[in-house]
Length: 543
Image 1 (cartoon, rainbow, N blue to C red):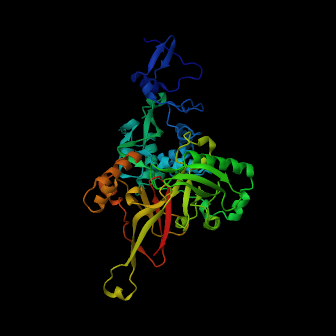
Image 2 (image 1 turned 90 degrees about the vertical axis):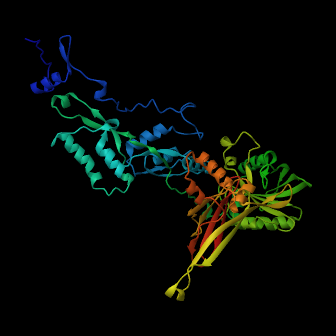
Image 3 (image 1 turned 30 degrees about the vertical axis):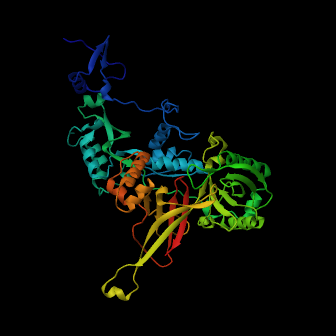
C-alpha cells in the first residue's frame, strides 16, 4: 500500500483521472506531509509587466539623448503597445525630439506630432529620415501566413492539436481574419508575434495542449530585411500669412524682449559672422548700432579685402515669415540712405520666391540671410559663439525646358501635349569679403527636389536628386568620363542614412537634370534646392 494524502479544505483541483495524469507526467512531489504540484520555469518562461516600471529610466549610458527633455523610448513604446493596435493613429501635441513618432513608426502605427519650436521639428525630422527599424513579419502577407501557421513558441514549430479541442477552436478563430485577407500587406492586420506556452495543472490533468500567450512586444523579425520610415510631410501655417510691416512694427513695441533678442543676434554677428560664398570665409562685424527706423533696424560694419564697409540690417519676426513687402520697403529705405554697401534681410522663415530680391541694386547688394533656430532658444544655443548662426540664401539658376510631346495619326489634329524637364545650372551667392557674386556650381548643392504640379502652398516631393562631389570629378561625370563623384556622394548618403543603397537606384537619383514629366500651360513647377550649408531655397516656375 502506498502513502495516503488527503486534500486540504476545498478538495483537489482535479479528479482522480487528473491526479493520475499529473503523476504520470512527474508533476507530483511529496513535501513533508503534503502532496505538492511540481512547476518548471519552462511552463511559463515570461513575467507579466506590472504597474511598476523599473526599466524605463533615462541616463547617459542608456540611450543617445537628442533633446533637452527626451522621454526614454521604452516608456513610450510600452504605452503605445498597451493602448493601440497596428494601423491606429497616435497624436503627440508636444513633439520634442520626436520619440513618440519614432516609436509609432517602428511599431506600425500612424502618427501626427506637433510643436511650436522649429528646432524640435528639425530634430524629429532628421531623426525619422535617418532611422532604420527592424522588419517585422506582417500578418497580411505570404510570409506572415507561413509564420503564423508554422511558428509559435519563440519560433519553434506549433505542435498538432486534437480535432475539436478548445485549443484547435482558439487557433481557428485567431487565423480566420488572416485566411480571408487578400494578402495585401495591410499593417492593420498586425504582425506575427512570438508565442509562449502557458502550461498549467489543468492542462496537464485534462491532457490538453497548453494555452499559448502572445507576446505583443516581440513580433517575429525578418533578419534579411531592414525598414526605413514611410513617407511623411512637414506642414506649417507660418508661410501662409507673411507678417506685414505694420504688424512687425507692432510686435517690436515690446522693447525689453526685443532688445534681448537683438542683443543675441548682434553678439553672434560679431563673433561668428555670416557664412556666404566661401565655406572658409565669414563676414564678421566689428560693431553694430541700433536704428529707430521701421524698415532698417540696425547698421553695422564688417571687414573686407578692400577695407571696412557698411551694412544695414532688417531683422524679421521671431515667430513668423518675412514678407516680400517688408523686403521691398527695406530696399527703398537702404536706397535712400545712399551710404550702404550691403542690405541684410535676416529671418527664420521667408515668403516663397523672396530670393528673387537677393541681387545687386546698383550701389548696394541685397542678401537673404537665414538665422539658425538656436537663436530662439537660449538653453539650446551652441556654446561655441563661432558656430554658423547666419547663412546667406542664394538664388538658384534653374532652366525649365518645355517641348511638345511627339504625337502621331489622328492625334496630330489636336493640341500636342507638353512635356517638361528641369535642369539645375548653379546657385548664385554674394561674397561680401570680395564684393562679388559667386556662381556656385551644381557640385556645391547637396540635393534638390521637384514638385511638378505646385499648388502655391504645399510642396509635394515628386522627384529628388543628389548632387555633390569634387568639382572636377562632377564635371567628368557630366561628360560621362567618370563615376567617382557619384560613388563618393553615394557613400556619404549611406553613412548618413546608415543603410546600403542600390547602385542603380542611386544612379537614377543623382544629377542636375530631372526626369521628363507632363505639364499644361501655366502649370506651376516648384524646385527646392538645398545648399552646401543645408539652407533651402525654393523657386517657382511656370510652364
